[in-house]
Image (cartoon, rainbow, N blue to C red; front, side):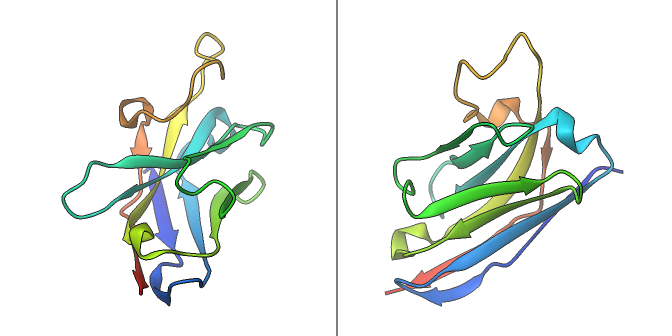
Length: 130
């Protein structure tokens, strides 16, 4: 059974920090690009950060660049998102997701499409108060 379980969400004041974690099981973790997405009420799900299989490449949405850092630990099948200087606009449900990597696809294009991700977690709520 494939599982992605997020944790670390909660209520935080603007300017504060949170570290989200995602524990993966049921698939070969290091064959997958990992990403963090978020969805605010009334808005589409958007990519926040992605990380390549061996952590050689990372990418971030412009809205969080400089404030967030994605990392993964393949030995423990986990991916994390450190979020600093949080803003009310960061309020959303945050999801971790896994996209199967192929050499044909490579890393020439951004891994930001929801449709490329095979597995999704249940989400964890982040609320940033002003």
